Length: 197
Image (cartoon, rainbow, N blue to C red; front, side):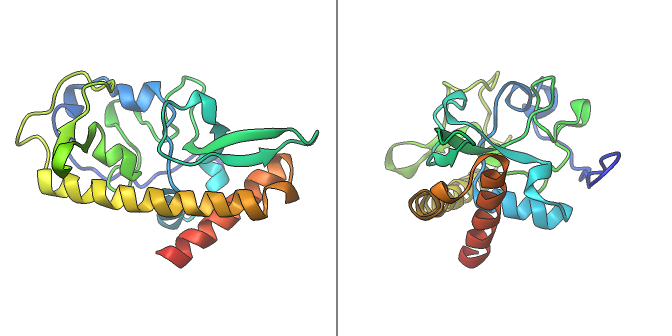
């Protein structure tokens, strides 16, 4: 996507409360993703992972459900990383388009689609009040069955992603260093997503 970036922004009306929010989830946090999210975005945008994601310092991502990716630097020091969307210098998500919202809305990562919901007791959908979402979503502002299905899909994908990361850490982490290691991990993760998908 060299030069001026063009994104296939899908003109879908954002539901409340997102439409009237300052989109804090897009502007304040690093967004951890799975290799499946990465593969879907690559396929849709016809681009390489390096253009929109990176291996971020795992300590700077609050409680991700993902396993840490082991990457060695050129001096042989081990770093624990997490696959995440890149951020702009302003701190917002790489795909954030201001008042327009998400530039890839419609095929954005599953963690973004299910936010701020989790599974509570008995597998019931629960609003996570500890997240940064400014107000509780009301019935009718989200699809309960669709959100529940996405959360189930998310849990499955996280398990498979973590299996991929553990395999990388055990077999390949020591083979590469620095930027070469990140590129090698992306290739490995995309191949694993393709095989599992």
